[in-house]
Length: 359
Ligand SMILES: Cc1cc2nc3c(=O)[nH]c(=O)nc-3n(C[C@H](O)[C@H](O)[C@H](O)COP(=O)(O)OP(=O)(O)OC[C@H]3O[C@@H](n4cnc5c(N)ncnc54)[C@H](O)[C@@H]3O)c2cc1C
Image (tube, rainbow, N blue to C red; front, side, top):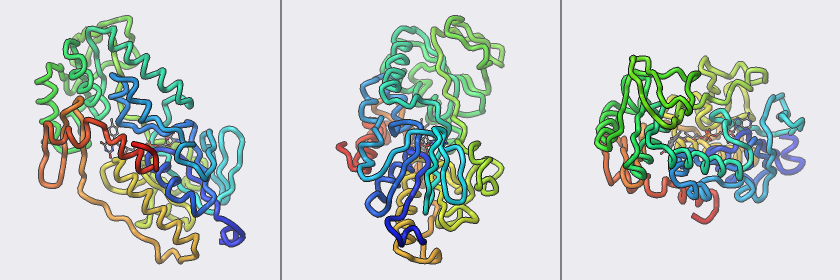
């Protein structure tokens, strides 16, 4: 590209989640890198639930972007538009690019300031501490892992988990769902399946919640743990609007270029790659695109780019501090072995090391 020949190529990475941060860290010595994210920090998503029962855990799992982006530039704002050669941000900046990477994963619901996010964990922990009973709405990974953390750290508290679907953890296999249900039941968590509560009418002051199945759940506090939507609605008004599928996912080629573009890539949960949406795969995308960007910057043709292949859908769900469930090729395990792999440190040390930081 002309700009690349004139000096360092300019790479704009939109979204500093697990995928965007690793890509930016890996490519920052080879290009002029800009990371656009409304938060000043990367949050390791699955550490949220441990941080809710142990707020100090978040000190390691909320990582300032500036700590790994030592040679790049952080733009603390949301991207709102993309043209053929620039990304426009909510705070009015126009960032020219030679190469662009879309890594916006899921919608942003957390505050931009790391200090504010730490305070949120303190507040949520206070809510649990002062409750004798807790209602958790949503039986996906967030609801299940929160139920597990509370059941283990606060065994005296009554926990009810309500889930609209027919089984917990619907994103993985039925064996894993069953093992999870058995574990929660053994910890005296009440699991109500195929049931819902009207989220609009939820208030901690009420303490009594009517379910769609006609039951009444008494709880001193509640947590809503329904999955966050993808952060792709902002792409509808951009040059990439034709590159979205009907679920709002960005359609990519095997080399992770966005369909129809030679200099725009997409990585992580926002892509339409037909695989389970997991952070370790988002990080694989990041490393592959870092490699491809280095090739393009050196002048390699698009035909020489590395391609991505999907693997077996491995998943780990932690159940408190020592146990967990692992869906592996050919076998689904529960108990202390998967617990040893994920639940103790929740891979926080590993993720930090990948970004060149102390574990
Ligand atoms: C409870 C739970 C447990 C999990 N456990 C595991 C596990 O054990 N192993 C595993 O591999 N995966 C796990 N996952 C899945 C994993 O968290 C996701 O697959 C991963 O976070 C996807 O990374 P990402 O970078 O694509 O997106 P995200 O992590 O969602 O990051 C997106 C980033 O984009 C930013 N952003 C959004 N919109 C904009 C915008 N318009 N402009 C600029 N920035 C924007 C956001 O602020 C955010 O920083 C778990 C998820 C949950 C919820």
